Amino acid sequence: MSTLARLQEVFRDVFDEDDLTITTETTADDVDDWDSLLHVTLVVNVEAAFGVKFTSLEVAGLKNVGQLMTLVEEKQT
Image 1 (spheres, one colour):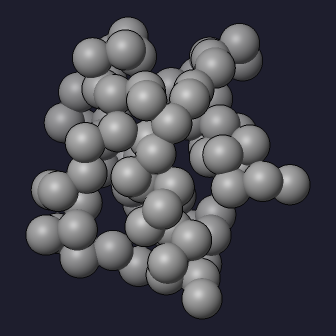
Image 2 (tube, one colour; image 1 turned 90 degrees about the vertical axis):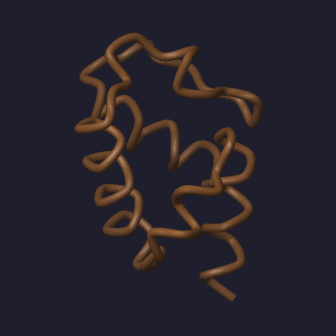
């Protein structure tokens, strides 16, 4: 399964939307209910799903799902 497909599963779980579709260009503005609390929940769930840990600086610098995907892949190598 691709990183983007696995991320989509995490997003669907966190936002409780079975039909949520994300792309590399998706931002918080594109997803209903994406607030600061769900952002933290999302980060924790992504870390758990991929077995990685992010620093607060890394998370703060993310602009879209594509950058998150790249960060996950970098952490896994």
